[in-house]
Length: 446
Image 1 (tube, helix red, strand yellow):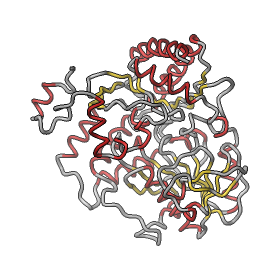
Image 2 (cartoon, helix red, strand yellow):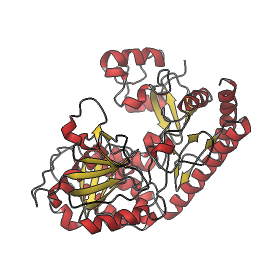
Image 3 (cartoon, one colour):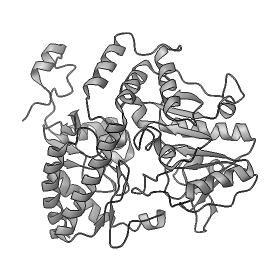
Image 4 (cartoon, rainbow, N blue to C red):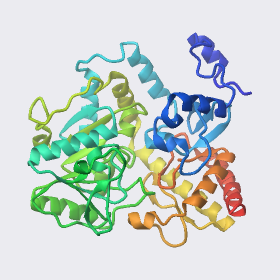
């Protein structure tokens, strides 16, 4: 069996059998069975269980650049990239150096640090709508805080969200729409009481709803990246801004995925629409856990200790995550974003060619650096109803065919495909060859 890690590195770091993640591991199956005995379903995020595509997951031992290696030593070209959190490539030297330096000074203090101040300044400099920034530990915490803040600032209760948008595991936002065009939400999962979503209105994406004075906030993914990748229709974001202004509601952009991935200014910079509040995650931690809410100073000052809306977190502004965030934002220049967009276009083109050559109907929409996948005939979808028409069974076959060829995608038909600086032309050339074989196998096994 191939060793999990570089022996010289292990020896230099003083790694022992007791501390090495590879010690005593025989296979993915063995380790996953062991995980299932200790962790519900063997995973700490539900989609990792491969439930929607079948089979059992590979377990990652290490990663570098565009690649991950499982515990058996098998190498994959990685199109997951920690669901977009990794943009410079796995184990980028600048990030690992920043983290290594920071950790020697301690891992958490429960006190303010210079790095959190500098990262807030870096975000404010790049995203003008964020006059003040508050850090937390995840994108879910960020959206939860944004909703609480909007309700506290406006004195209203109702929140409007969109079919197919995902805003993390926050009870008020885990709502599913009913059969109407615009419906009060129903609990989208067991464990969420009806009361938690009673003031959540779920409406179609890419249609501007008519609001009233009961609405505290409209929360939207400015580019929908959790139902494939769907761009905002012309006038949609502008219409939301105008409608919120008309009734005094706050416009909240969930940029957990798009923030600092679509460009230095995120989706709002790309489309020229400024929200009242923005939620961040993913990229701003360089792959480490972090989240943030930024927005107008008047609104943000409603947060404690300045105002009555409570927020606190022992690990918020963690010195390790903020060190990584400062390192990654410092490297994300206009040239880097231009190169990432070129690579995203090439990824979509090579996947389109591979599927077309095999007779597999599929569309790969691109928005900036984001690539989506829709399996089926016709144009790319523009809303949730269109997105859910994708052929999930065929996606599952394509997913496993790609995995067998050494290409890792997200184990779900509605996730984005992510490229980073590690995906150079040589990697994409190899990916093109593997995708052609995988597409042919998908059709052959249908």
